[in-house]
Length: 159
Image (tube, rainbow, N blue to C red; front, side, top):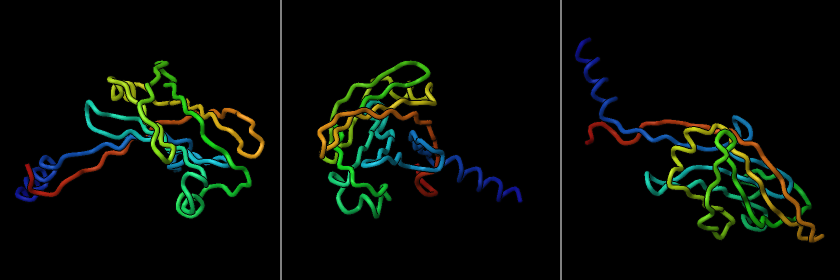
């Protein structure tokens, strides 16, 4: 019995762990779904090169997978995401937009991003969009809640 406990302790102590961080609208939903677009908010990167990435997908930018893979809300509205802003509710911190990907993923960065995320459970995301049929511009605001999930990486034995 003692040998089993030692083996389990060695196994647990030799594994490394990764914590995935995302901000979600609903606890069990990975995406924020609205009429004409979907948002996904995740932290990616490694220490020193952390990013908060907001994927802002529409049927036009994401293509056929928008309804199948992402399960987007069926709508006749055609919108374009013009901009995204973020504000951390507890501390009032904002992030600098450093890159916009071709599928309208907005990459934000701050040298203290890990600290900011650790101290903010809530994130306000404001999406600026334009209706492509009418030309009307509007903004939509979402309150998101931080979700952390830690899981082991690697296999036994490793250094």
